[in-house]
Image 1 (cartoon, rainbow, N blue to C red):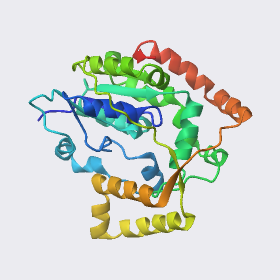
Image 2: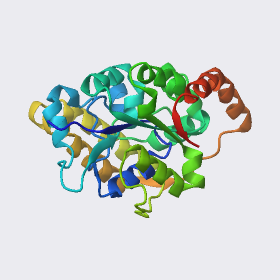
Image 3: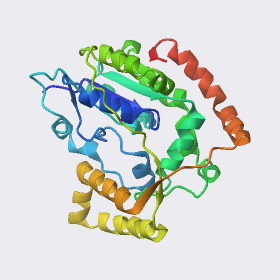
Image 4: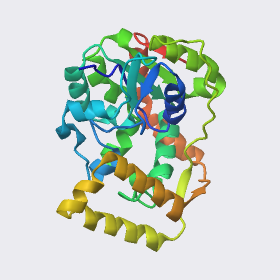
Length: 289
């Protein structure tokens, strides 16, 4: 059995879509076709909504089937699943799976990340977030998505520092070629390869018709409870296909208003202690910044 060689564990809205495209484009990397397999932990919204796929119960053989076969040009295989960062059990599962696996982590200032995450996921079909960012931040679990040091600790306790590479979002914006080369070197694949893959950012979404969104959520919840159909919907590939179709048909891109300066300062103060601890953690890790 050939194990997977690397996993991107987070964080969302920190350049993971761009980095995943660079990984997928490399001929020596066998990247999961759907980017996110959700084997070690499900999405944040699915966990909140009680609609988890429970892929881990399908076993390691199923997990390996989600990747291109190794051999030939492919010398390194992996996935990028930002929800893994937010479940300590995922860290334990990954450590049990392969102690020497390589981990990629994308980070950005927490207020930027959590505000962007809110607007991107506000109108999801699996679960809706509150009508305002302030209301969402009353939820302790969601509020703490930006506490990166807190969520990294279970990984730092289980994996050697040299097997973890942190990529800062600002570095992706400033010098994408340097980031690309650094990640390839970390994974021991040809660092001179230049895929020149163009990927846009994942924009915030708004429902075209709010009643359609509400109906879709109720329909999905009802159908998911049916024994036969529910099992089909809990295929990760089917779930992703339905989500993409929903966004194409029922939502539209939208520009969201910036967070007021006074609120930004308030939330920066909230994350300050965690950011101080994160700075200390990063001193022992490989960082592209």
